[in-house]
Length: 217
Ligand code: DX5
Ligand code: ZN
Image 1 (cartoon, rainbow, N blue to C red):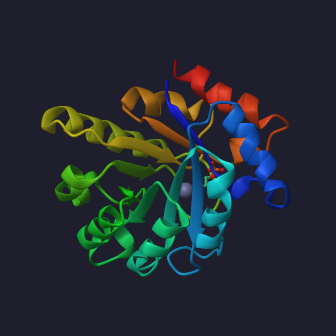
Image 2 (cartoon, helix red, strand yellow; image 1 turned 45 degrees about the vertical axis):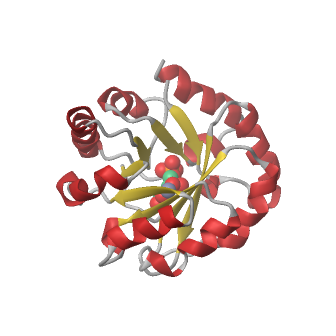
């Protein structure tokens, strides 16, 4: 069964604590927090202050997805705010290895993220050092986009590398995930599913968390 990581990007910000409690009670293991800087992606979202505010109200793993150009500038801030995992895009820095080292040195789990147009081969040298790989299943920047099935091959490739090389990182998917699209991803080796609009743009977010789990039993 896949781990579920609801993305608060689609939550009700005025009632954020209620929304977080709903998905935590439903058994979601991870809370996905999307950081957007207006440069790497067009939109602005929120910063370390939100992570700090959420930390004491939830026991879920706080998974910070930095859609930020030159993320090195803010890694320590998110670590201090209470992030459990910090993800940096390989496309967002000339020094991805150093960025991942910074995350590990801060005592946080390190994640590398690849856009739909980025091949797995580009991150192969990093695989021994990461705790999680995030395969974007849409182009980053917005919630509510359509899942891109061509990304499934990359999940399978990563799963194959895990088996051949003995790596033990998690494989996370993000974008357009619902109870249908998650099925092939889980079969290909995805172990964590981010879902924003599918979970929070619903009458019953808890039922949607369960539906993703049921679909990957
Ligand atoms: C998109 C973000 C996602 C977003 C997913 O750039 O990284 O985490 O919240 O939203 P849905 O699940 O609606 O595609
Ligand atoms: Zn995300």
